Structures are given as C-alpha cells and as structure tokens.
Image 1 (tube, rainbow, N blue to C red):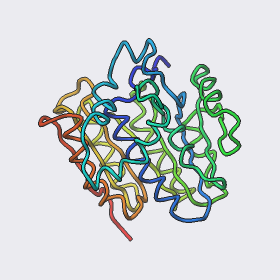
Image 2 (tube, rainbow, N blue to C red):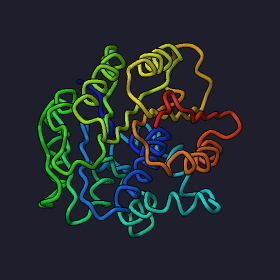
Image 3 (cartoon, rainbow, N blue to C red):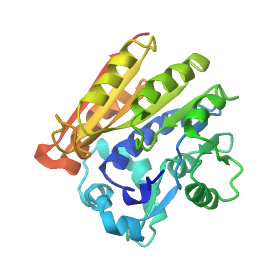
Amino acid sequence: MNYRHAFHAGNFADVVKHAVLTRILVHLRAKPAAFRVIDTHAGAGLYDLAGPEASRSLEWQAGIARVLAGGIAEPVRSLLAPYLDLIADLNPDGRLVTYPGSPALARSLLRRQDRLIACEIEPDAAAALKRNLGRDRRAKLVAIDGWIALNAYLPPPERRGLVVVDPSFEDDADFARLSRGLEAAHRKWAGGIYVVWYPIKGRREPDALARRLTHSGIAKILRVELCIAATPQQGPLGGCGLIIVNPPWTLPGELSAMLPVLTTMLAGKGGSHRLDWLVEQG
C-alpha cells in the first residue's frame, strides 16, 4: 500500500470526520458505563504538519487551519470545542504543527474505565502509532488487517462503543467491502455505533453504497456528506461522506448546526452538504 495519510492530515475531510467522531465520543462519555472504541484503520495517530509530507501537500491549510482562523459563533463553537481543545493541547505554543488522527482523538476522550483498540497493519504507521500511544493501559495497538479487525473484536466486553472504519480506498474494491463488512459486523453487534468514512470523487460509488445499505436490513443509518467542489464525474477528491449506524439521538440536531458552518469555512459559496437518513427505524 502506497497511501500515506501524512500528506492529507488535517485536510477538510479530516475536519469533518473528526468533528463528528468527537460528538459521538462526548455522547458515550455522558453515561457512567464503560465503552470501547475499535479503530480498524488507525494510521499513525499523530501527524507532523511541518514534516516533509504535509509540507509538500499543504492540504491542512485549507482544512483545520481555516477552522482555527475563522470566528465560530455559538452553538457550533461549543459543539466543536472538545475537538479544537485537543488540537490546542497538542500545539501549546499556538503554532499549528501537530494534528491528531482518530486514535489520538479517541484516547483523549477515554475515561479510566474505557478502552481503545487501534488496528494498523502497515509497519511504519504501526510503529509510529505504538510510540504515540505510549504506555497508556487504556489503549492497545493490534497489527492486523482492518477488514479482519472489523469482525474480530466484536462484540466488545463493554457492550457499548464505537467502531471507526476509515480505509485508504487505494483498492477499487473498498466500497464493496464497506457494505459487506458493515453488514457482517452489525450481525455480530447490532447495538454498536459504527462510523464509516468514504471519499467522494464522483457520485457512482457513494450512491451505490447508499443503495446497498438501504437494502441491507440495518436500521438507523444516517448519511453525512460535505463537498468542497462539484463531483458529478469521476475525478479528484471533491468531498467526503460518513455513514453512521445507530447515531446518538443528539447527533442529527448537532450536525444540522455544524454542517452549514463547516461547509462555509472549508469550501465557501461553492460547497455543499447533505444530512439525511438512509434508514430510520425505531
């Protein structure tokens, strides 16, 4: 696999994904019972925005840098606060040089009783993740293929938690794997929260994924999309989407407030967003 997320860390797609993940984790923390986060394609955990990869692409300048520079009014400011506070903690001198991946974000919101399983098979990324997780007993690195991990650790002992599925999409088969993997995982753990990220480079694959999931038998599927450019035909990355199974009851309302603001900040007048239910039951 040639994919290196360091080139893309902190871009608009990371902002959307991590803002949503934070809101779900805040919801899980609201109850005293323990929860577990299973990150199937965890990456390195932390990314150097001053490093050679990020300095070459500079995608973060049109992503997290815009969010930090823009004035955010309430209530969106409070909704984004846990996410932005972690970034501030990682950059104490005020200069943006470090950006958290999803395992670092999740670990920052774990309590003593909560756990993180971070799965990464690429050797360099796994080694970096191991360093970044340190000796935290709440977090465990597992060098395993993410598609295998999607089923291997379900259901978790805590019976509460979040599964994050964020593959590289270097393989054309990843869209088909998403629907099959999610259906199989849901059969093993129907009560879990699942967040599946996907790129939008055209409408064919995202729309096919939505159709498959609509007829999958899975109840409560929320779709979130944000596009910074029109994507009618196959081309470069113009947007990203999230499929959320069993979203917290507060999440649709929070996203209704957040998405218009994030779209304006990340894309200006040319951007668009979508928030809808593929399946709404129960």
